[in-house]
Amino acid sequence: MTNKKNSDEISQLLDQIKAAQNMITNAQAQLSDLGYQSARPATSDQESAAGKVIHGAFDGQNMLGDNQKLYPVPANYASKSKLVEGDTLKLTIETNGNFIYKQIGPIDRIKAVGTLVLDDNQYYVETEDGRYRVLYASVSYFKAVAGDELSIILPKDSAAKPRWAAVEAVIA
Image (tube, rainbow, N blue to C red; front, side, top):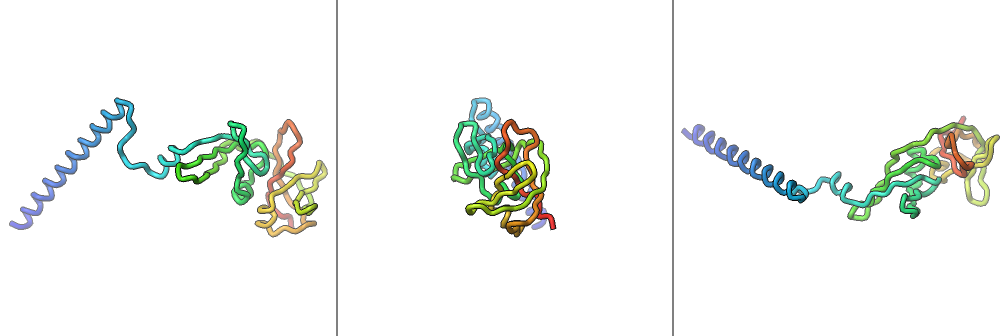
């Protein structure tokens, strides 16, 4: 008898849960029709979406937002993602103050080879076509030293000559 009783109780509880779920779904639909958002707790994605979103272009170190403000891009992210001048970024400033960058529009790229130079505490790569700044984080990551030959990435079609390059690799 005990098993039958437990089974009946479990079945009743499941029916109550299903009824409660239906009530919640109906209430959410009614609230949505009235213009209210879901009463469900926000997930981390929804919290990100609730933050401020700014689009902009990478300038070699920063993102120039569509609001004409500069936002510093973490050097390790720019290096790891091999961002080049002109790449389109999306910055989400979450309600808790976190800045989350995402590359959403890489521009066409070309590669070049040059020599790493340290001049006045700034790293450059000198190629046949010019001299380009590179992020210290990239130089450090690849354990490059002045005089090393590097493969770099540049924007392919740039209205103005780029000032910055992304480090692709050290050529051994």
